[in-house]
Image 1 (tube, rainbow, N blue to C red):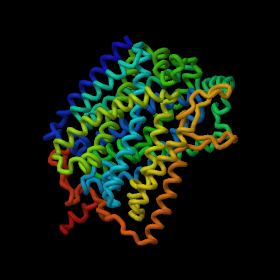
Image 2 (cartoon, helix red, strand yellow; image 1 turned 180 degrees about the vertical axis):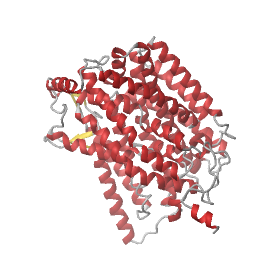
Image 3 (spheres, rainbow, N blue to C red; image 1 turned 90 degrees about the vertical axis):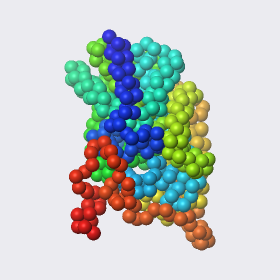
Image 4 (tube, helix red, strand yellow; image 1 turned 135 degrees about the horizontal axis):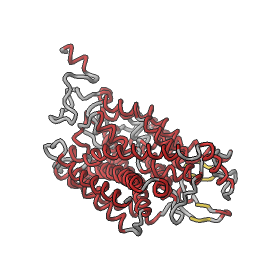
Length: 542
């Protein structure tokens, strides 16, 4: 029964993804504007579901409870970082939406290149985003693999088959496929959340759950796990939170979801409402403790199977099938959006800039489609080569990489003071430091035995203190130091700066800006009258 319900729902979802190419009948999906950002025309509800489907993913529903199940309190870093992210994103996403719509940007790399007058910087930002996105896609595919293992489908071929099917759906429909599927996904996840709450309510209660979990952690050999952070673990926890806050909206796929919105108000409303999802994130973290207390054991030690196993053992078979489908779709949707955003970055900042400057819109869309396939199967290679103990580790490794674009993109939204050569040097230095430190991180098992000599995690130890620090923040600090010192030096030498192609007014432009060409078919309908930043000017007749 569980497998039948799972397969039926997943098949229906994939068919819906193929049908999305004709959703609202776009004039032509063979352009990057239509294929890559849905015609920049998504309204409040579509953007809300797309944001949830892109940012609250299998990472939320599989990786976070697996981490709290495995190490306890450290896994809770995901909750404060999600909450702190909102006010920062409220400011930055509105600004990048405005400047992107004024100039027709689709990617962070395009903006960085125009802001600092350096196509080379734009291409480097694009490449960094692509490399950082691949391990994040791998997080989603690990969750899908865990679901397949739970229903008894083993080996690598089911994962490759699922990736192949969703790739075909994305290839055909572009961003419209994950946008439409996100609506259906949230319906399924709402059922899963309600079902989980009912199961917890019918159990012995949270007091007994916490006591059992505490007793389990007391028997483990690791001094770093438990319901409370040890003194040596507090620095690592805080740096994980800060690093994740800075990195989450620096990923290309987060920007893609925002650029698909039809106006600034849509962006700001959805970011303001995003903390609602944090409630679900907190619940999923608690379910890791619940699974531990109920004696749920992962398949062959794979902690990513904890949540699917819990559904298998504690839910009715038909309800478990719904949960499997929800988790699978929660993995496939962000994987699709991430591959689209990485493909857009390659096409706009590398292919069109250096290989085919006169490429027509149809050719841009075609190149992005094929590049999106490369990204998905590149993520499969990450899984095969690294084989992390926790799916979260892959996301945090990607975070180390994407953090190095902060000076060029997010600080660039506030100021053009930095020199383009300094930004390139800082980005390169930050990446080198980050990769070198990640290479040195070991994964240590019980009794101090080294399980993995290299790339064993994303936090580096500080001597013999037992404390750790997130590698991404260390690399970003080096990056910022290089950028600042070199910029000051170049200013003293009076070296000419790159030409800033943007203006201050670009960062507050709204959909009714006369310099922005409105699309004829807006998904949620054209507004009856101007309602954005330029409404007062329009109504006054000036």
